[in-house]
Length: 546
Image 1 (cartoon, rainbow, N blue to C red):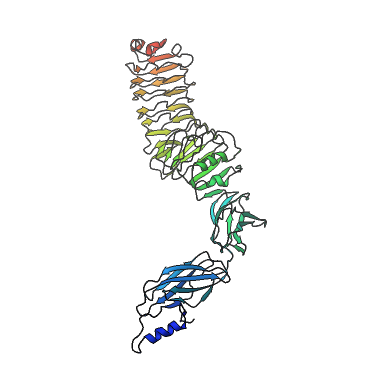
Image 2 (image 1 turned 60 degrees about the vertical axis):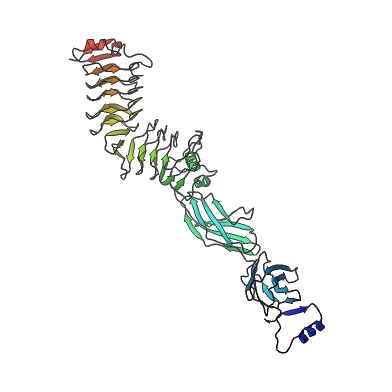
């Protein structure tokens, strides 16, 4: 490349001769014109290039403005004007929105008021457009019959995409199909929903991206379907099952679940958010490896999913559900989370759970187990107790026959035996406290309360239609409202020498009053006291215990 500049004189040759004659042989001129030097273009891509030039001053000439001129061969010139700065500085101009695969030329000019200087011309060529480049397919989530893949174009090749998607081939059968993304709007990444897969089958998948220059294929990945849903993002279970009825009875899940996913899970188990049948056949579900997260979405029409919480009515009305393994990360199981799950046979309390509420209507529930790592609860004979085995937290309704409480139990929680099928209870001497409604609506026929139990709380035996005989201890002090409401008692034995205080509605019945027919057995010599005491005097038949 020549290092000299071309000078266009504003006057003619005569002016130049006059200037030369005016100078002495010993005096150098002070107004030499600047030197312009262009450098090769750098950073050339399909649409961009960097131009560099140097302006060098000689004598005391002021630094002029400099223009960079460039154009595609045969095209209209474009110009960048800039201040040159100090002598010898490199001037830089970054060109954008160039045409791919085109030849360009460029040069510099300046004008110091006397002459216009023009540099040599330099040529460069932009790179041509090429086929697009795409990253390997990413498995976002998968289930027994569907999956979601992510595909991302890392380089469009310089022009809009004409196609983006993946090929799916089932090994063994060789069946090949194509799943294409909607590229409207110039997208460069997409999620591909691959449906209609076969359970327990192996597939090869590879992505493709195309423009007018050609098509590029990604590396092939292999995936085998199973009975496990693998979820990497909340909301993906709903996407995987979109428009599909679950035909599988037993499935496992892993990954985050939000309200939309839990709503979908209910549908897979046979009920939508309004309680209508969906045809879903899932009855055994392992959620151990999932995490319930809060993002403002609901799993029914009233309840929002919350972090680590098996919420109220999450599984309500799923009458075909047989068992469910709850998320290992769940810390709270709310009351009535399994309401009216009539087919549920087993629940296992996870290691992280610190709060557990009962659920009514689980008529087939036979066992409530506890993960060995849980520090808050334990299980004895399928019954849920606190860690010290002093409090019955939840008694499974499906147990029947006789039941002897552990000798360590000192308390029975609210509604602990509600609706259970036990006909006879043996309560420990250590029992000091029972919760409200503890035996309500159960099938108990006869019960003997411990000697030191002081209070029968509200609704203790409410709705126990089969209860015929109750034995109350000598330490009883209070009978609360509705303690025997709805019972058909025939005999009450009480050992307290002083009549316990009875609340206003202690013996107020629903239906036929039993006080007219039930025999009240009191300690020897205490009949008179009971006949004149509040509540007890309503009984028609008294008999002293020998």
